[in-house]
Image (cartoon, rainbow, N blue to C red):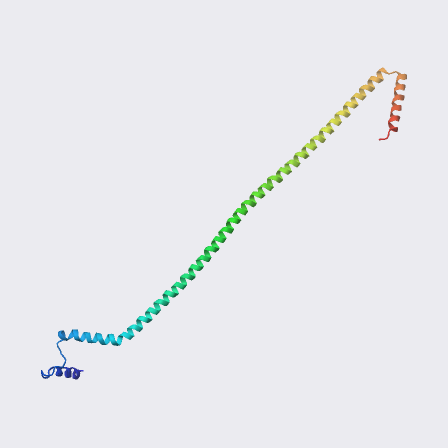
Length: 184
């Protein structure tokens, strides 16, 4: 390495007639060297840098495209989920309304059947009361009739003599015989 540097230095100390050589003054030669290095880097590194940037650009675009596809898929799934939610909410509302309607129907049916049962019980009660009234009336009639009959017999027995008694019995037998001949 020292040989290379020496050869460059020796070129710089050559005769003044020769204008070509290396200037070892760093401050004077730095912008020239930098521009040469940059020119070489740009010329040779342009392809590599371009490829790197193109690859990175492609990766970014692919990532963006994948993100867009995922976003569209997520939006689609979200819309489907919202549609299912709306459907379930509608069904829940229908079940709720139908449930309330069914409860109201059952309530009305129960009230109606209770009224019918009460009405039947009222009818049975009225029939029983009517039957008991008729039975009581019949019992009272029988007692009144028996008392009237006993009173009449007592009066007849005290007022009747034997001859009148025999005529009354004969008349009553005749009436019973006539009643017997009348068909029912």
